[in-house]
Image 1: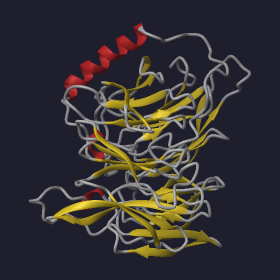
Image 2 (image 1 turned 45 degrees about the horizontal axis):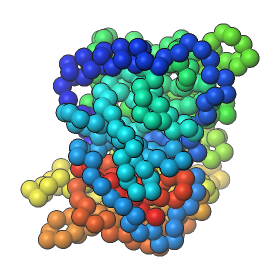
Image 3 (image 1 turned 135 degrees about the vertical axis):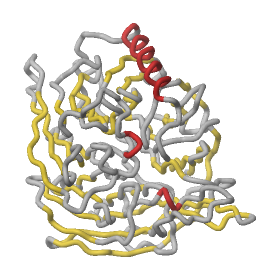
Amino acid sequence: MGPATTPRVARTLGVAALAVAFLAGCTSHTESGDARLPQAASWSSVAGGPSNSGRAHGSVSQTPELLWSRTLGAPAIGVASSDGIGSSFQATISERGCNLFSLSADDGRKRWCTRLPTDGPRITATVDGRGSLFVPMFGGVGAVASEGENRWFLPTRGTPTTVTLLNNRHLLVISHQGAAKVVNAHTGLDASPELRLAGRIGTDDRGYGLPWCGIGERGCPVPGPAAVDTSSATAYVTVWTPDADEPELVAVRYNADDSAAVDGALDVLWRAPLADGRLGVPAVLSNDRSEVYVHSRDGDLAAYSAVDGSRLWSVPVGYRPDLPPALLPDGTLVTGGRTTTMWKGTDDDHDDDAGPSPVVAVRGEDGSGRELWRRDDLQQLTNPAATEDGRVLVAVRTDGVDDVPGIAVHVLDGGSGETLHRIEVPAAGGPVSGLSIDSDGRIMLTTGLGAVYVFD
């Protein structure tokens, strides 16, 4: 999905009004202590969690079937997140009405919805352990309580692409223009000075470069969320500084003494050149936090050392994914899909397609990478979702009915790529916004047209 079509002038006015509403509401200058929880142990952000592993915190049924479905009345954008205590959250794009929904995971009942000035290639709310949300918006990030009340709004230089809880007090925010800072998760007040990862951008336009973020071109300095090691408060993110010849993989650490009253600071640990370019997909952190995985412009999946950014290995996958790989417990990486291979309507002949989007599994061993298995018969439409017991779920295009392409979800064996179970998604077509798994094993698929399907 591309950026929202709402006029930016209207969104700018909406941000200003929303900021006033937030600040007049629940902002507090008191410290929260241990009142808040860290990021939810569920599918708590765009790529599953802080490390962007695309992996659930549990397993799914051997033969999942449809539990419920519903429409949201507007095109959906981004992956659904969940709080691990019974609610899921989905963002949409609309000219009026709600565009952030809280749904009961059991039956799809709308718990609440609200209208926010969202914009960006993928909008997913980050969720803490009590169901409070941190939502990327046009020109800032907003905190929303578990019952839907606005808590605070933080203006940023650009739209946040990274919104990650480092712990129960600190929220890391990095915008698509490269402005990084840490804020108090309870109050929204600064807990670090701003660090400009891409240098100074020569404009005050908060939307500058945003249309390029979905495809990761150089016009968008920071297109995808950082992979974050919360144990060391270290983030790994791809950055393309304007006018630079090539992008970089950048490691940033938040240094603070929790026992001290003074704020901490973000420090750049190292910068590693990405000579083969980079895509807009998020970086992914390995299970042992020693490697960072990045897709290059030609689609190759490369591993870099988390210690110094040195390149460790690379594997060609044969196409350019638009979405991040999923990381299995044994270290196998399963590549994501291509948005350009989605069905775009009955008159679309796919002339602009760059090729099919197979499902490819790779693994690094003994200092090199290799392809483990490949499914060229599956045309993957969105991000894959892995499970703790070594399976991976993919949403793929099918022949459908009456020559209208449909959608199916395959449950694959992560070791061999074999299909263990197939689910036909009823009456589903068009692009897929995202695929996620909550902590109770419920599978949520959202189509770009705004239909939500949950399987259990």
